[in-house]
View 1: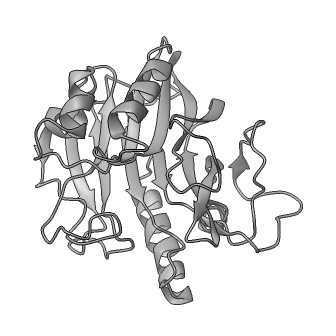
View 2: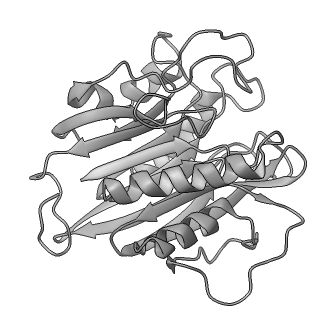
Length: 292
């Protein structure tokens, strides 16, 4: 089974139409090339003033009943589903708006699955759930069944360890408590805004709670760097950081963990690189009984 997470940063205010289309095309090409089973996206957004989509959506859209933010025509997840379908791949997908970004975007999170989604949900795990406060934090999760076994996948974009209003530890405690209620295995994917090499902060805290870093479990891995240097929120940093992760509630055999879209084998499509892992075939079997 192959899983990808990337903070796609789809609507930042300096992005050109050419860059937007490039991100869609290169991401869809990798998804199809590697026949990815699950994809988690963060900062997957739309313009607040764009027209609302009317009629049917491309792919197989799984709406979240509690959501009030409509999907608009320039929604990155919507357009990705469309491009995938045009290229011959129909994915199950869902999207949720988390907050207003840059005073002009519905900043959201999305999930894509090659396999049917049995259930989907979204909820805030920050102290506040104010859509107009940029510090509000939300997750979207999907339950996927493989050969009689269910797994939950949650896409997250965390706050910072030292934030006085919305500290990382408070957000992680809230998220952890909610996800530990699940009987099934849980994958936690996304941008954690926490460096792996800074001890005693967010990354260590997630592991202390019992979450398994699939990067450490992987037989084969690269340097794991997912941000090359200075970006929004990390203005003082001028060196590479590993801040994007795929965690699992259960330990498992991970064949590989690879950074993608870092300018090596694939072009750069965001201010973050992506993380792709492959899980041993015996760990998860598809609904058709075919090994991945």
